[in-house]
Image (cartoon, rainbow, N blue to C red; front, top):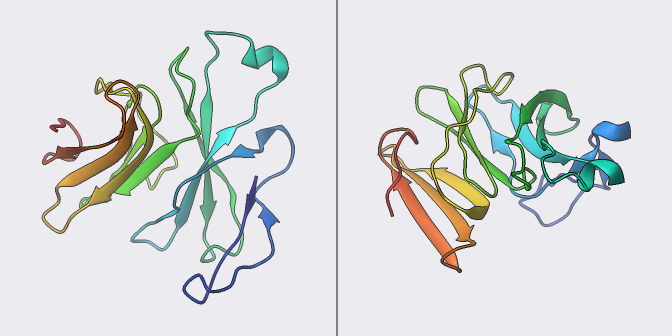
Length: 171
């Protein structure tokens, strides 16, 4: 997996650089998350062998890459294990809550993971019952969360809102 960096409001970009080497490489999409501490997190879907891809009950995993030098370099920071049969951990959104906790929502079944240590470790998933892709999480000044996502069932772009740090969602 590769990344590029801009230091001039996206007018120019650095040459592509690798996040990591070997089997822990992967692919990702979506924005990075800059934490209050200055750490920069980027989620990367992990690669699988052809044999693993053929297994319907495989457990996908998401790698959390971290930069502690303002995005000049990234290292493997954490791994988030998916739910067996839930294919699509590569598309995920992360948001830092007011209390410093992080929430992460990946594609497909919209499960929520929580971290109290800047993404180093993650909770078991909490299912929220959404069949989604490309989730992006925004926190507004009043601490309402918005998860903007594509919907497999309803089609199109949808938004769900949470007023309680992602424990319940409406929309």
